[in-house]
Amino acid sequence: MWPVDGVVGENGAFYFWYDQNQGRLLNRYMDSEEVRREKRQRLDTIKEEILASVPGAALAGDQSFREADLAIDYAEDVPALEWDLVEKICDVFKKHGAQCKVSSIHVNGWFGDYDKLKMTQIFARERWGIDLEEKKDRFLFCGDSPNDEPMFRYFPYAAGVRNLLLFSDRMEYMPPFVADHDGGQGFAQIAGTILALRAGNK
Image (tube, rainbow, N blue to C red):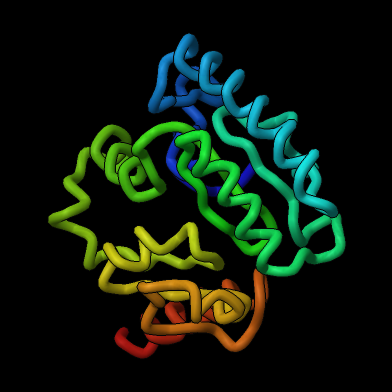
């Protein structure tokens, strides 16, 4: 439904794209179905521990649709938790050997050494036929939370929406440009700035 070439999801667990020839959505996972099933069982154990030990935490509203990670809601459909409780959620993930990243509303955990950048590089190679390392200065990445740090660090042109500033003291890599607005309005400002600059160069 979106005019995009693909979607990298769940911190790099997969990418989806719409195949025009087949007329349907296709996917490319980092792990096999068997491996994903085994990891899901391990994440279920972590889920029970977090919900039992962190007051106010809840499963993300879209958890039932997730393929490879566990998303714990700390600020979307529940009253925002204090940061020490967010860190407690992270500690449970880490105790079980899982990766863990904090987004603007969820704490996401998964098993595997992949991230958004690794799968984006694979997507660019497999779907576009380009080596992203050679072309990364032709792209602009826009993000909103700490789990976007690998992308901020990699792309020379990167931007964040304003709510990223909530996490600035907990991040090592910040983008060189931050919008004046949060969320979608911030993205619209970034896109509008690019279009205005392009128009000025013509």
